[in-house]
Image (cartoon, rainbow, N blue to C red; front, side, top):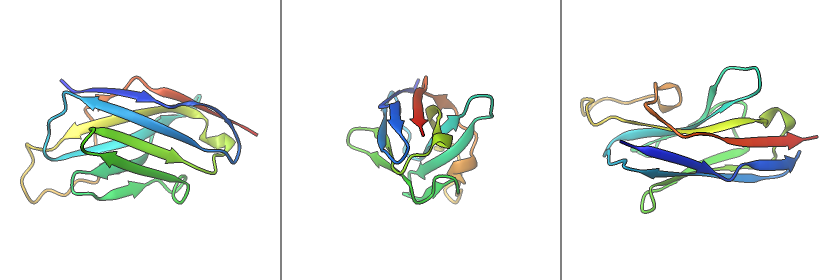
Length: 129
């Protein structure tokens, strides 16, 4: 059973930066999607950045050019570097993962919109103006 634990959230002023980390354990899929999602107060959860085991990366338009997703395979850690933060980035941020080993070899997932199986507990990011 995979476990995901986020860290690195906090409060920052607009224009500042934060780096979120997600430590994954019990996660041994060879093929997978991992992503970052956020849920602002009163709004639905949205996918903002995702990375596949093939290295393909995708971003939501709202964060493109400001956020960078990366994965350290040696540490099995997913990170999200968030720069030029805006008040509208205020949300609970979640790390998520899903294994794809049961899919055929030719399967090419759209990781940003995939249905994820494992979720972290979330970390709060607050950006003040």
